[in-house]
Amino acid sequence: MPPIDRTAALPLDFLVIGGGIGGLAVAYVLSKAGHRVRVLEKRDLNVSGGGHRVPPNLSKILRHWVGEEELMKVSTRCVGSPFHNLRTGDLVGYLHWKPAVMAETGGDFLLMHHDDIVRMLYNLATGAGARVDFHTEVTAVHPGSDSVPNPSVTLANGDVLTADMIVGADGYRSLVREVVLDEEDMAKPGGMILYTGVVNAEHLLKDPELRPYALSDEWAIWMGPHQSRAKKEFFFHVYSWQNDGQEQAGQENWEELVPTEKLNIQDHGPKVQRFIKMAPHLIRTRFMTRSTIDDWVDYTGRIVLLGDAAHPSFPGGSHPASMAVEDAVVFGSLFSHLRTLDQIPSFTSAYQELRQRRCELVKQADIANAHMVSMPDGPLAQARDEDMRRRKDEWDEGTLKAQFEEIAEIFLYDAGDAAEEWWVNWGRFSETAREQPHVVDFSNFTTVTISQE
Image (cartoon, rainbow, N blue to C red; front, top):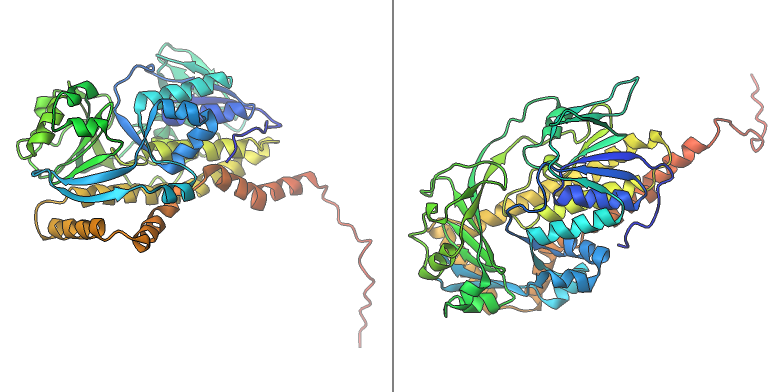
C-alpha cells in the first residue's frame, strides 16, 4: 500500500476535532492529498499513556509512512506471547509470531508507546501541511444549512471556525457524535475496568526474577480472574471484571490517574505483585457499552465521525489504534479522488460501508480474547489451559496453518487497497456518468418496422 501521492482536484477545508491517533492520522492523509486541514486538540502532546500492540495491519501502514528504520527506532518487534497462570506464574502456553506468518501479512507485530505513535503522527501531519492547535477546546458543533452548507464550531474562547467538512475524532465521549446522532450519548457500564501502568525497565533489571521480561522481545500474559499483560518501557494492562472484588468505578477516558495501591492484587502471584507495584500510578479506564452507532455522517453530509467517536473500541484491546488509523487511510484515500462537491455523499457513504462491519468484528474479537484469558478459576479455565499446553507441545505446520487462518482476516487487511478497490469498482463510474452529457445517440440503432395485422 503506497502512500497517497494523488492530489485532489478539488481541495477542501477540513476541521478535525481531536488530536489523538485517529485525528492526526486523518490530518496527515488529507493533507497529503492536497486538502487544507486544521486539527483542534484540547490538550497537548504531553498526556499520560501506556503502550499499544501494533499488529501487522497497522505496522505496515506506519512502515509505508515513515520507513522501516524510523519505525524500529521507537518500537519493539514482538516474537511471541508466553501465557502464565496469574497466581502461580507457571507457563501454560506460548503463541509464536512465526516469521512465515508475519511475512504473509506484509507487516510485523510491534509494541510501541502511545506517546511515540502520537508524536510520529504529529510530525507526519504537520510536515504534510496540517495545522495543529493545542489547548483549543471545542464547546459546540453547528451543522450547515441549505443556504449555508458549511459546518462550524465554537471554541471555548468564543471564536467560531467554519470549514467545508468536520471530522469528529474526539474519542469515546465524543461531542461531535451527539451532533451527528442528534441525541445524548446513552453509554452504559460494560462490566470491566482497565488499569494501565508503566514501569521503568531499569527497575525490572534489578529484580532477578523480573529481569528476563525486560530483556525479552515477548509480550507476556498472565491469565486469571484479573488478567495482566506486560511489555517494556515497560507497560502493562490489568483487566478488572465485574464481581471480581475490585471497585467498579472510573471514567471512559485515558485521563484518570489513581494510586497503584488502589488495585487489589493480593491474589496475584509474587512476581506479578512486585511488577505492578513498580508503577508510580495507574490510568483507570472504564469500559462502556452502546448500541451500534448507525450513522457516522450527519444529515447534511458534512460532519463525519472517525475512530472511537464512530465505533468506541474495547479498552486494552489489540486493535483500537489500528482501527482509527485504518479509518483515516480509507477516508483520506477516498477524498484524494475528489473533483466535485457532488461526490461527497458517495465518499462518506463508502467510508462507513467499508469500515463499519470490520470495526464491529474486530472489537468483538478483542472482547472475546479478553474474556478468554481472564476466566475465573473452574472447569472452563482448566480446559483452556489444557488446550494451550497441548498446542505448545504439539506445534506443527498444521497448527501454523490453522493459526494463520484465524488471524488472516484481521492482519492481512489493507485499508488503502480497500478504498482503491471501491473507487475502481464503483466510484469512478459515478464520476464518469456525471461528466457525460445527457444525450442519447441514435446513430447506431437499426430501423425497426412494426406492422399491424
